[in-house]
Length: 218
Image 1: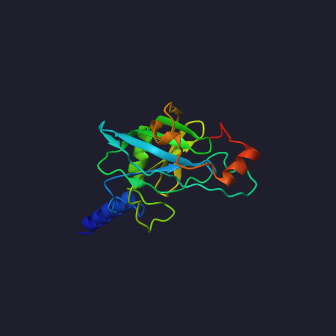
Image 2: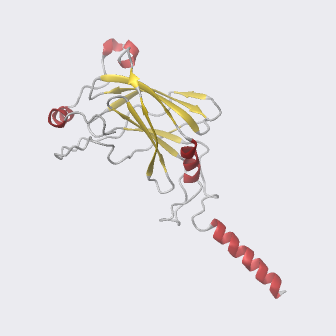
Image 3: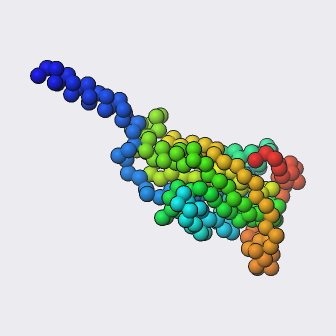
């Protein structure tokens, strides 16, 4: 009897070690994932269109929002260089499996130009998206795992696209980079008389006059 009890105890211990306090397998989670957009400081964007091709080769049109979180800190530094703090949330892509490719057409307000481009999402990124909702952050194992996976797409002057996935600790992990092209029809594909969604802000004008647009830093 003692040997049986010892065996059961050993099996229970192995199970605890395998799952651990960091396992989020039984935590609540959404069946869908989120997509959001990112912009560098002062480099405001407006998303005209965004679509997702999922791993089952199904297309989902007009996903995500129209704008991105950004800032104009006027702190005297070249804060538009690089992506800075990659923040923001996303919009659920209801019905879609994990993403294979993202299409975006957007207005680069600081340049008054319109770009379009595709960015591929690699298998490693999809694995990270799955893991982010099934494993708790090791730093805060008492908290439940992320409710939904998040893909962030950065859009920058010159037609640059960059993608991040948030890990189990909400940290943005860079997973892909791509180069878009100019949209020859202009904003809203030639509608609305070629007008852009916004003018260049006064703060952005002052920044660009002083530092320029940091092409190549994204």
